[in-house]
Image (cartoon, rainbow, N blue to C red; front, side, top):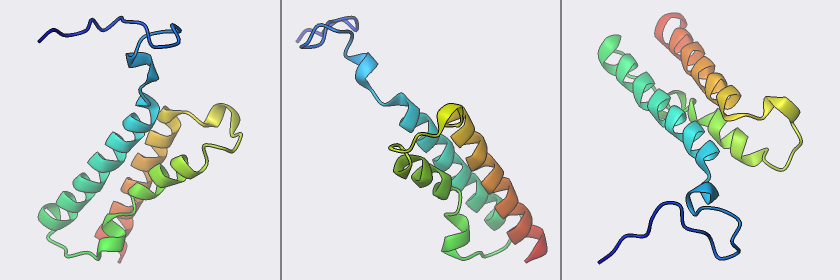
Length: 102
């Protein structure tokens, strides 16, 4: 069994097979998943509060929003960094509201 080198050409000869991976979506998805798990753990074990599932899944909203707005022209705002920062901001706002206000 042999492995193909990472720098092999694709069928059309335009570049590597690794260049075709959607790493932007993956980066935002990893941040959203980490924020969702982190929020759940902080609320459950950090503050000892039982919170409804909808509140705990709120950090996933910016990720899905980023997926559904791919066809829209958002200019320079449509970057994985901005979507990740929005996800972190939503997570912190949710933690602040559910953890201390509600």
